[in-house]
Length: 357
Image (cartoon, rainbow, N blue to C red; front, side, top):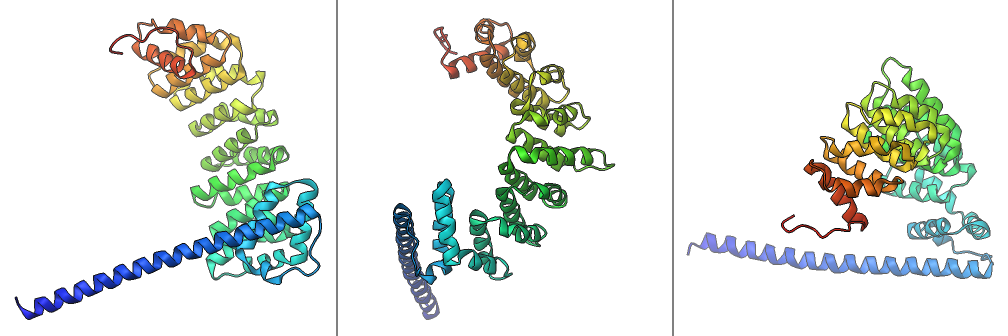
């Protein structure tokens, strides 16, 4: 064999062996680091729990804890699990250690980015009203992840006044960020509804409104689920924008009252199948027996999702289960299939399944 080939093969084998050893060592070290971090986190949680059970703050707490990101994660998680006096104890402990000062300092840095974002995430979970202005500043930050965390912080602090500015920013960012921003605002709950409703009304009046963000805002109203948003959702349900109609119909499942029943009935005949699919779900949630016939008619809809949602809605309406049982003998095989699927899923199917079906 040529000596050059032998040399190349030898070098290749040596490199392969070296890489294998390096990989094995890396795995062992990584596992050791993870085990050490897990042990340290458990130690922190035990120490916090012990101090809380005794109701005693350390007179000379270890300053190193305030600098440790694992401690930040542990104390933030602990704070989210407790309420009342226990939460106030955690806040006092955090204040005595100076944890928030460390987090604010790190969150204000541009680099390293990972350290900054981790600090900001912990600060969101430990924040008090004194951090409101910091979060206001950061919702205009160049980094999208920092902006999302700033919105989370303002939502957690219940700063309703920031809602219009936050939604305006959402119209200028990528879709994933806008969606996470809207989801973060859910934590504000009912107090945010007037601000969201006002923003939607103003945005709708523009010559070129943001279809995507209005849709997200409508979804936000549904997630909060207050009837206070119903008039705005009904206006969106009658709009010429399909995405708005879909979002409104979906939101009315949780935010609608009897006033929404008739508009949702009309939406059962919408040209967009997505609107029909969401409207029938909302009507099922209304438990209004007067919509039984119209909901049952959608079992013959051309779209699979509409048929399935209609069957699910019937299972919630008074007298709906009997309609599903009767539909098993329908000459329309698609309607019978939707009824069979719902009845078997809910455990209400009372017939033997025919052979070969």
